[in-house]
Amino acid sequence: MKESSKTGRLAVRLAICAALLVWIFHVIFVQEGRLAVEARGGSWDGMTRQEQFQAAWSLGPSAVWGTLRAVSPSLYALSLLLVGATLVIGARRWQLALREQGLNLPFARALEISLIAHFFNSFLLGSTGGDLLKAFYAARETHHKKTEAVTTVFVDRLIGLFSMLLFAVAFAAPQIGAIRAHEFTGLVFLTVLGMLGACGVLVYAAFWGRGSGGESWVGGWLRRLPRGEYLERSLLSCRIYGGRPLFLVQSLALSMALNLFCVLQFHAISQGLGLSIPLGLLLFLAPAIICISALPITPNGLGVREHLFVGALSAAAVGISAKAALSLSLLAYSGSLIWSVIGGVVYVNLKESRHLDEVANAGT
Image 1: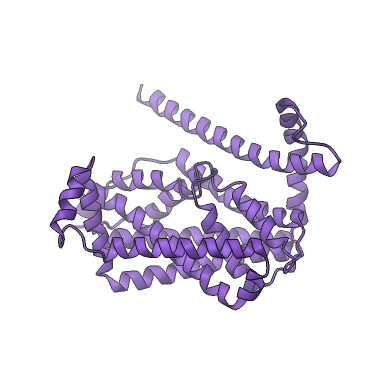
Image 2: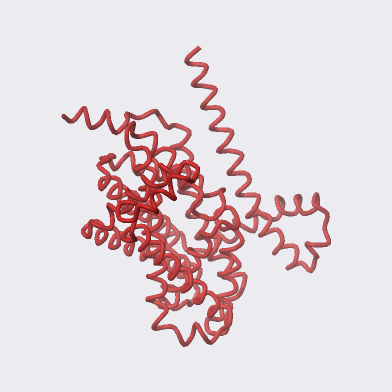
């Protein structure tokens, strides 16, 4: 009975993975199918849904394969390694956040959960939807600090987003003339600048703003909200990080390294496609587009990211064709998708691990 229950759960997980991956590929095939139909002089919008579906799955796979074959295999392999490096760095950064709350999660377990979150990021809204699963697993890892464990996911994402926005704005400065010369890239810059300001306010409020310990009315106001005691406890958990300068320096350093690897992934693919995109401009565009795509608009930013890359790289200052810009975006996404598949495999084969409390007790 127990064995059949395990088999049933495994079958459900396999079905979930298969359904989600099919949906992801369908979205990509529709994009490629549209391009193929319009390149032949057809009208995509004038087709019925059934005709669009048939065109997507008959033309999409070959178009995607043609795009993949156009890139240098060695440089594409390098880009895959760079994506993996960002996941490893991100897991290490989260592990540091957990340790500040007294939760000593082994790095292997932190990486395992991060891979699962990356898998679910592939279909949930924006590129941060997997954080919900990450928070769920974090809460399961402890008996007595569930709120603090969930808070670490928020803190890790907040630091990561702030550092990437800061990275993008910093590297925009040397390219500001070229950026402002084109309306689309100028709008991207203003959007990122606004996001940096909003995120900076949130960082200050979370880490250093006066909380319930110094302002009694704040604590009273939070406690009146639904689940307010948890919100208050989360706020107090965030305050811990504001008083740990070493943690902030380490997290920022790891984040900047992660940002650089993200840019180098796009640079490797652009070189593999034979595109002449200035690295200086890519240091701004790649993180800027990643941040905007993280907004919960479409699953994993699909469509939003492609639109931004096409609009920005086809600017007169760069002169990259729309097809080439789309290829760059899709190839970069395919690298992320490959690691999502790995995360899916981890999710399917996930075994119940010992709780942090049990790990801590075993070491005493």
